[in-house]
Amino acid sequence: MDMVIPLFDRFEPLDAIGPYEILAYLPGATVRFVTARPGLVQDVLGSLPVHVATGYADVERCDVLLIPGGGSFQTMMDDADFLDWVRRIHAGTRFTTSVCTGSLVLGAAGLLNGLTATTHWDAAAQLESFGACYTAERVVRQGRVITSAGVSSGIDMALHLAALLTDELTAQAIQLYTEYDPQPPYETGSVAKAPAEVLDRARTLGA
Amino acid sequence: MDMVIPLFDRFEPLDAIGPYEILAYLPGATVRFVTARPGLVQDVLGSLPVHVATGYADVERCDVLLIPGGGSFQTMMDDADFLDWVRRIHAGTRFTTSVCTGSLVLGAAGLLNGLTATTHWDAAAQLESFGACYTAERVVRQGRVITSAGVSSGIDMALHLAALLTDELTAQAIQLYTEYDPQPPYETGSVAKAPAEVLDRARTLGA
Image 1 (cartoon, rainbow over the protein chains, first blue to last red):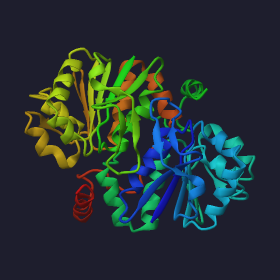
Image 2: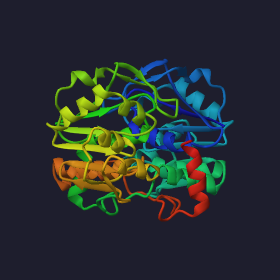
Image 3: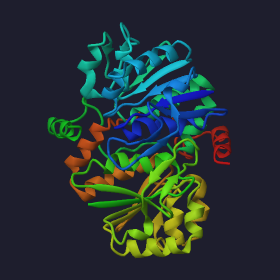
Image 4: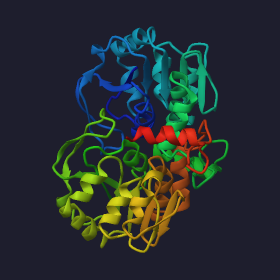
């Protein structure tokens, strides 16, 4: 089972690494990171240069494509060759997926037109500009396209995906192994729950 | 605010990257990864080589030390120079913290003797061999030592830590920005909740 995660400069670390942590434990799974020009790829927070050995152009098919978000989504969307590649790969995947603003890349590739989808809460309008119908749900499956909400939601998405690719027992065991029994300290993890002052402050973080 | 996360070969990706994603958004925070010999450090899942530019020996003090777990804990514990460094750094931190089996490193350095602490559920006996009292709680604070449970618990720990280092509004805003409103698909994220067959399967994953 071949899974591919494109990493471009300014990727959001948890968008990519949360699902990677889950999916790499699937029996027989191989997760490959790919990029435009192989070498060091820097994350948006600035301290995590990852060496990515494979160019996306060298991948011709995979079972799962997962597009993370972060500051990299604009670079991906501006790269016509990359969007062509996304469309071509999507034709052969079992599941084409995104975390956070990675869904904007799927949108720019024309893959979300007419679909219900999700993204980071601050990117909803942009998602709808690609003909998608935004919903604030955390994980949204439409056939073999699965989008998830901001940053940390990729963990939930990956566990759903793990069950779809194998079985529930395997997904449950990975959830236990990664001790994913979350106890967030606050009830401010979604726009629906957070007070206005928390939302105002949160908007400054991505600026 | 200077935060340091040691990464050694076979580190568990989410142990390190979950807290990094949270802590790097703190105003004025710098997160540095450090290692034994600067260069590429490979994770335990095998697809995420990170370029770490700083040797731990070049760091003389920091505000927060965070030790992740994974297959790297044994290497860290066997490195007497590293354990000396951990003790020396701990003397000057505001908080000394661990995720997953990173707590075994704190234990080996003698920092958990007589303290209540947590770790990955499968490492409880080993933690107690260092004189700590294991508890299955997700985040355990004892003064300026904070340990957290397996893999994904580092996100919860980092949000608690964010509030301790700044204020609750800032921590709440980071929780919203990272859309940390978890909706795990199963109730199997802890040993207390998981059925026996899930526990048996989970034990095979780390083997």
